[in-house]
Image (cartoon, rainbow, N blue to C red; front, top):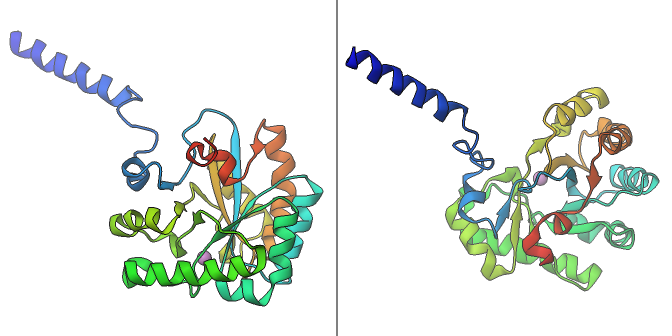
Length: 239
Ligand code: NI
């Protein structure tokens, strides 16, 4: 009888552990954010309905202006992670982003997988693109997004000395796969949560992105979401 009670208690304890939301912490799927919360963010730790749209790999003179037009139409500001050679080729597009209140971040020069190439290469990549951005905007960005989101402890630990913080994402729109507007919308809506950072692209096979953004913005606003840039979302950047 005592034996049975012990098992019963153990079973109840297990059930409570399983059901207790504090056991599964909100950011448990982002170990680097848990370890370095001031240096890397995949999503905002908040119950507030805020969301940040981010666009990688630009600028160009086809998709990027279309995205800027649709953001302007809806009075939404976003964050763009830019590649050095494209900044050099399309400086006017970078100026336009800045003039329209968007935030510009660094997305390396040659888009390498940094977990393969290492810290020294990351420094070169970041500094080369930093020069390109500085040439156009005469200012430096603190925000860095690693190509493919590929980072590890040593790369993240090297960022503060370079004056950067890394930005990941909690929702991959998968627009880079050339998905339709509807598929991109579903991808975002199905994964929506307070403090979402959405990964999209302003270059490549992204024909669905502009239309998806045009429809997602009113949908998300109706759902009570407020659009913010990454610096508006990350307390360490506005404190
Ligand atoms: Ni990229």
